[in-house]
Length: 385
Image (cartoon, rainbow, N blue to C red; front, side, top):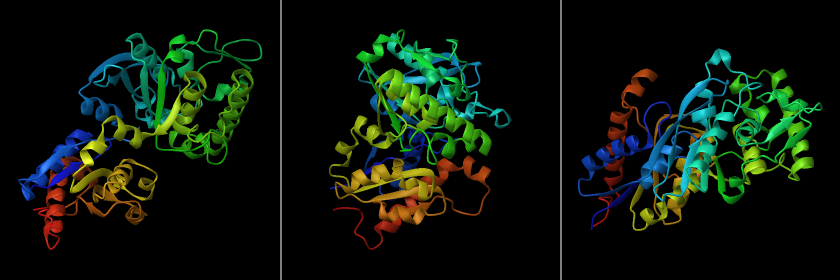
């Protein structure tokens, strides 16, 4: 009887995709255990790589669309559809992401999620009635107002004048007109995939926690937090929905709140949703080992990022999980308390970050082989039989 090894890494951000990482790990596994049965199950947690993982893992297809970027300029964004023919998968970062804005131009007072709404509209046009929106990597702090505007909502000031895009203008919001909101949203299931539970406002809200990385000074953080507070008050009054304290409302600059308020959306753990969509539990049945991976392992990985999400599911089947990481940061030891059995840094010698980026596939392959050979020594991992 041969070993069954499930290979479920996420992408190494800015470098290689999850499927490329999985194939590299598989090559290393086969060098150590040529007869092993390997199952490739690349994953994502709602951020970068979510579309790729769900589309490639389900035999779906990709689309491209010209949309309004976070600074109002047109750009080409990709999105996908799963193989079930019903589910569209969107990464908001493709249309409204931080990587799309040069560092010197980052200003969450003016960036908008309008392009994300334009992709949702196209998915509806193509007949998809289940839409998954990955809430990671945003450049925005507009509570999804731009997204909702692209779908027909109108945000008005005290004089009845439509507000310009951007989070700062929400301080002047007086009324939300949803009479023209796309009716198809009410007939669809919209899911926000996220690994954060931040509320919309306050010291742990969207502005305070994520605003600085988007270019916000302490003064701008305070301005934006007040604007989101006003948005929440108007939403509660006009739409009858309290969004400010809902867990995950602060995801992607408040897009979590926007999806709930305007699209009837629900927020779910990104990694759990991806694992369920890909049927990873069926792969774990009868498995001997799981190998996962990510670019940098540290304390933040604990908060239901992909490796921990995979490991927790594997633990339910009594299957150990090892993590191959590009780097090990502060607090990575905490992962041992969250179903990770072993952690290995993939570097095989001192090198610069740029060198490691060029060699990631090779390093993953080597680390997978080393990990398997270490486990085989004295463990009976051969792995079974």
